[in-house]
Length: 212
Ligand code: HCB
Image 1 (cartoon, helix red, strand yellow):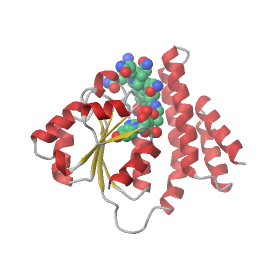
Image 2 (cartoon, rainbow, N blue to C red):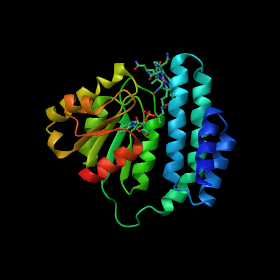
Image 3 (cartoon, rainbow, N blue to C red):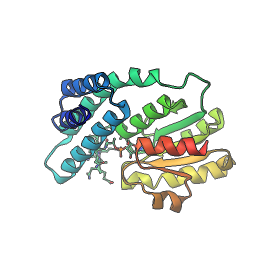
């Protein structure tokens, strides 16, 4: 049943078990569970792993193993989700990357996948992306939205520079800006003048849709 699949998906991440994550994905697809809900289950368990990492009860290798398990599961779900992708023309372009100084990419990658599935052309700049690269990419690709991901309090401040440098380049009015990553909040987005705060990948997709 759906509850069993969701529970298995969560357990797989908590147990760093890639095979179990794949099994949850396969069982879920067979049972007709929405793949997005399975990804949300992985993500929620990944959040719990993060909490344990912060508490010092889990260590970096565990975190990496958990994220690998999550990727194994997502790999099974992705082709299925792409079948439902709107076959019509692209909904628009989104440029996204993890901000300068920050190498956390798991959450950003989920946002990239979900936007792709929702029909957007996503230009993924990767991680540790210099502010000027975001600006150049906006100039080159003219996306509807440019999104930054920041997982650390020390790197989220650099999201301000994206706002500023887009203004300096005369590009700020041509694009919507989005911020996300665990330390970001709606308050933070309001404070720095970002147009969209994406609390989760699902939230990011919904808000990008609403603004394009
Ligand atoms: Co990392 N790390 N880490 N880490 N790490 C955090 C982020 C800490 C909070 C843990 C802690 O110590 N308390 C902390 C940051 C503290 C701070 O704020 N200053 C931290 C630290 C300090 C570090 C290092 C400096 C550790 C060290 O070397 N001493 C180092 C960073 C080096 C650097 O970046 N320069 C480091 C390294 C690592 C890895 C490599 C082991 C690994 C990253 C692997 C990778 O990404 N490829 C890692 C991880 C995994 C974490 C935790 C445990 C989980 C992050 C994660 O993937 N969450 C994290 C603890 C935590 O966050 N609670 C810890 C799961 C994803 C799915 O959630 O929030 O990223 P998410 O994304 C969501 C959501 O935010 C939204 O959608 C996603 C899906 O729903 N979203 C967006 C994300 N980006 C968006 C962008 C948009 O525009 C819109 C929506």
